[in-house]
Image (cartoon, rainbow, N blue to C red):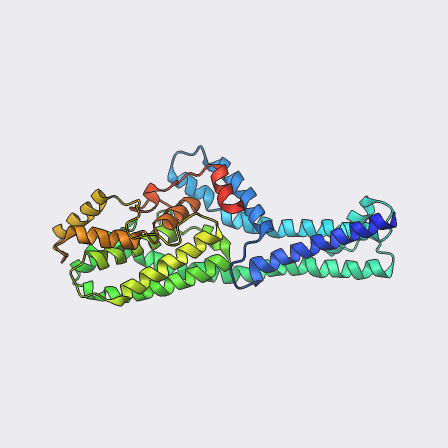
Length: 361
């Protein structure tokens, strides 16, 4: 019997330790390290939301439902942590010669929630009860203290997304962005835009891997999305490099590089498949006909264009192939609103099995 109690004590200690490590990985560690417990929580909550949104007919209904997904998951996460900590300490209390599991659970719950109604008894139990109370309070305080950090990162992200609506329309479109800049004689101002979004991509890369729940926090306006905004900027930079007959500026190259690196890292965190070393002539989701339509639309607005359309298509395709798969994958994962060349061709209504594959694989 003593051996059984020792094994139960070790198992409870391991469960508490795993829970603490999960909390550290989720909110303290400043890098994107996947955590199985947090992933399981988000997977389970996502499955429930998928059941809710599977039969809705309009995007607005789906957006209203999914707006609650990330906040609800974040609130469920500390509850799961507390349950696991309580279960682990229940095992340890039972191992310290408590007569029944009911007594162990009552003592664990009293200590975890700092209610103090249970009789602790011996000094070793008192030490363990104190440690459980500290851990319980610490887990809740950890989430509360990081909420301002998360909303600050969300606010910085959404400021740029909102400003893009003025420049690229709603939903954002790469040709529309170039046309609007041309109409105000502002094509020479494009490098400043690329530089600003290079910084934006770097910030998103850091925050959306270290605090993965940010990827699912939706924009205040249903027709906005950080994913479709990223796609519009990358496509605009790719079109500027391949189509515009203006002096080349390296800021567009740097923006493209920062963009597809950021999207790839976020996609890797969620285990979205993509080719890390695509070839320039690999197929992309944007068809040649769609590219021609964009070219002709720019030409109709008297935007200065390179005369060799075939060469322009090859150049555009060579840039797009670097982020094509991850852009569509993230648009599907986040249920982004429909936007040209991104979410309009992605799986916007994933089945529960699909979203579980992204989270739990």
